[in-house]
Length: 500
Image (cartoon, rainbow, N blue to C red; front, top):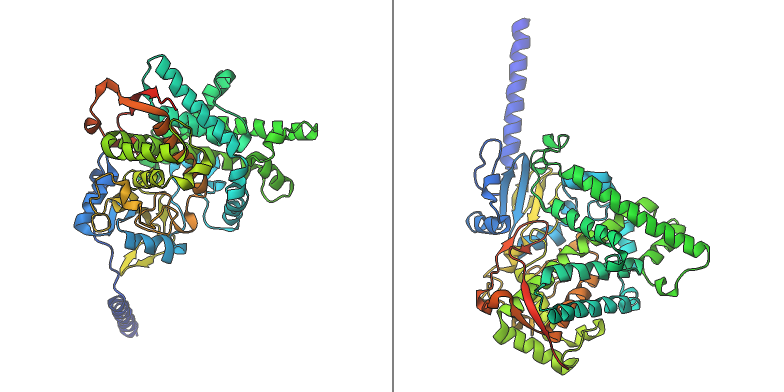
């Protein structure tokens, strides 16, 4: 009897093994190619100081869909416009989740942030609020006069530096102006006004430090077991920064509510973002905690990205002073007049300036890997199987320099866009600095007003000389990798006002 039972079990096991083997033979799992990982660290050593460049080179060996092991995290790197379209458009829903960096867990920001929330009813509500109530053409037109004042202040700052024979750090000046743009659009208030002394400095430092912390490589993101230790102290410092910002935003919100209660509301604030969010709060379409974390998203996403694009744009224009700068000045002179400030209403008439912005975003996308995606379940992509919970990076930097897509891809040639319909709004996958699909950056309409207005006004208002009498072609264009792709050596130049 025992022999019969044992024999039966053996037959059953053999049948099971055979069935499983046969099933696997019918549906083989082909993982994407990639370099062999080392024990423990995987392929982290392959990233180097410039991961966007390192992974672009590896993609030339392993192809446009590449698999790496970064510590304990399976990572898929997408390096072509065709596969990017598949990920961001055709299979967008399967790739719509985010891996949450440990730093973003500070103050539970990932639970309320429209950037990090999974696609859900809450996420859809927040996206709808942003697209239909905050960044519509009508809303942005209504408060453009507030931003116009900030451009005038940027020009006055450059004029003062010229009178005092001081060199201007273009990136820093653009960062402050970006903060001013956002704070006036959101609160009708200049949060970095020097007359506010310590409060203004604290606000500027908080936003700056959040960007610094978020851009640091964090071991906890590669080895999740280290999250509870916070070995580098990044989450601890980020928690402190977030708490201070939330306290500040809460104070501004309560201040506006009190003014409205007393009937002292300023008519100049009737078109700002805060006023619209208060209306939605009172209608129970959004709650207070989501509102406060939305403010963090807006400032974190809209300052460093904008200022770095302006700095890269100015660097490329000054580096190509005999061609691009001459053409840009000629267009500005003809359309708005020599030495005048560019208004948002002028942008549609400045075709070459818009091409300069697009060419800058092609060569220097602010976030080179966009914001990472994650597949929650096993997914098939172009014949490959992507394992469950894989992180997905889209190398927008590599796509923007792909020689199969772009003629002379390493040269700064705005003219390539003059007769081209390719744009940055997420429809053309060879140029996706703001992402594409349902996760496209919701602040894109505002960014595409801020950048050309700042860049055009700086070009048209001044004659520029690089610090140290550096020849334009000798300007260092090396970058440094972080949350945004910044210049390694800040662009510093002396300005001489143009006489209209």
